[in-house]
Amino acid sequence: MDVFTITLMLSAGLLHASWHSLVKSANDGLANMAGMGAVAAIPALLWLMATRPLPSAAVWAVLAASVCLHVGYKVCLARAYMRADLGEAFPMARGTVPLFATAIAFVGLGQVPTAPQRGAILLICVSLLLLAYERLRGGFSIALFGAIAGAGLAVAFYSVLDSYGTHLSGNWIDFTAWLIVLDTSAFLLVARAMRGPQLWSTMATISRRIATSGALGLLSFGVFMWALSRNPVGPVSALRETSVLFSILIGVVFHRERLSGRRIVAAVLIIGGVAILAASE
Image (tube, rainbow, N blue to C red; front, side, top):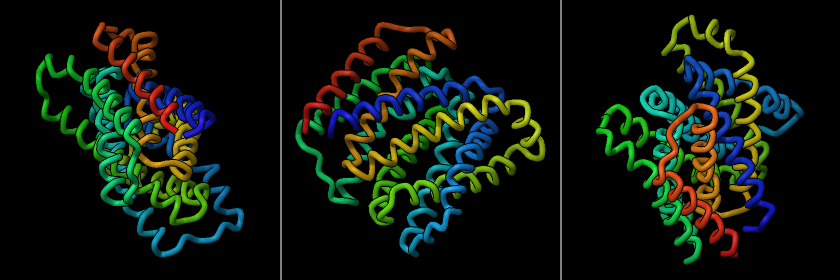
């Protein structure tokens, strides 16, 4: 993986953590995510309207499965943010993603990471799980950890599936645009069913927050999909999970969350894992 890709992925990690911060601090995270999806869908829809070809039947199948996973992730994430801080829920939800994604990519796609990449991915996973330890000490919540587990598994599966979809489609931009439009449509229906008619008025009251988080989410996801189209799933997924480092800093600075020694150590381990990834090619 080249330095340019790593730099872009780290930037995407910051953008990723930033929109999660906006969702966490919103009065209704589900409505915020529904609205930000609609914002991201506008440029995606305009791109598809520019006489882009329709996906093949095989790509449609991948898109359908991926949309289900993306919607499930958002629902689980909203539930997790109702029960924990940003600096807790986000790292725990993302902590096992690189490990799961690498395992799934190996079984499903035959992608075998190199020994240094495997070590780096494992190091990042351990460091992220270390961040979750404090929450475990405070007591076990079935609702919280169920939401976290659901979110983590959904991300792991859709990372592999989206990587496959970008290659199957032959055009990562077209695939990403279709995914954003379909995901937005499906999640709006789910959010409407969960919140009722008041969803629209709630979205109207946080329109500025929605616009900002939508732009951040679109940029972050676009970089992620571009990287998946060029590199193995495991290393790309691991780099994306460095967004937890930014989420900890954002949580401390903007949400006044506690910064413990354990979180600092875990952050240093994350940086070490990223450095190994950078030097592994």
